[in-house]
Amino acid sequence: MEETLIVTLILNEEAAEYFTDLRNQHFPAAINYLKAHLTLFHKLPDDPFVYETVQEIGRQQRPFPMEVAAVRSIGNGTAFKIESETLLQLHKSLQGKFKSILIPQDQQRLWPHITIQNKVSPAEVNALVTSLNESFKPFQITAKGFAVWTYLNGPWALNETYLFQENSL
Image (tube, rainbow, N blue to C red; front, side, top):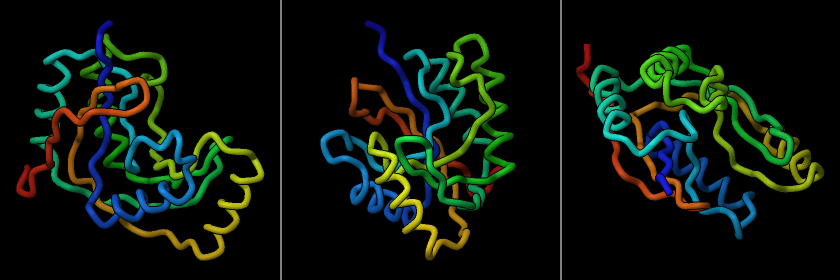
């Protein structure tokens, strides 16, 4: 069986810890294999081309701000909506490079979000969304790079990280 790669965005440490803490509080423990993350591609082939492309694009990118814009229900879960024109353009560029290997889900326009709860009842979702929205104010986080993972039928294994360059053009 061919291994599947997942590409995520690396967040600044403070943001990563904040969202992971919320995920640990609200994601069902039996299926919470991961730290909080922002997925860019859900299923890519395990091919050197993927690593080379992610590294090349990452080398040309500076870290950039993103806005945590809202708390949203995602059906059976809760996520934070992320807004960033830079992220959308970066994703679109990667989509162009990966065009021939993308599954339909990864061909869609990116809806950037960070899931902190999933596979729970609508009542649990509504309660958390309501609770979080009581004190929510939009805030900024920073995109720092890309991470490439292998999907292990639940958990993921980190393969490589490619940090954006502070002094990129």
